[in-house]
Length: 109
Image 1 (cartoon, one colour):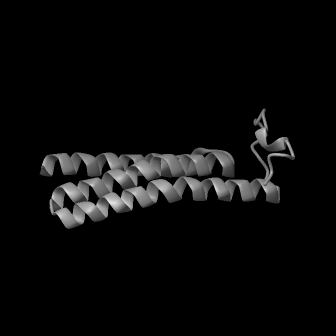
Image 2: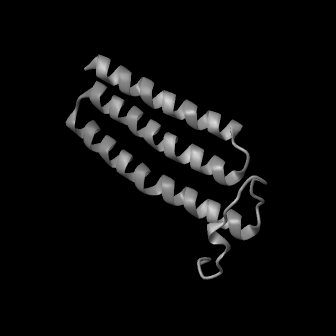
C-alpha cells in the first residue's frame, strides 16, 4: 500500500507541477485559469487519496473523500466565476484569440 500511496502522491505532485508550468507559460488570464484549475484539482485529489491510503483508517478515508468532493465542486466553479468576472471587467485576451463565445450580450449574466 505504501507503493500505491507513493505513486499517487508523485502523480499528484506532477499534476500540480503541470499547473504551475501552465501559469508561467500561457499568455493570458483566461488560459492560465484553465491551466491551474484542471491539473491542480486532479493533483490535490491524488495527494489526498495517497494520504488516505497511507494512513488506512476509516475516519481519515471518509474525510479524504469529503475533501476531494469539496475540491471537485468548488475549484472549477470558482475559476469559472473569476474568469467571467475578469471578462466583464474587460481584462484583455491574448491577441491570437480568434473566437469570443461570450460576445453575445444575452450570455452575460
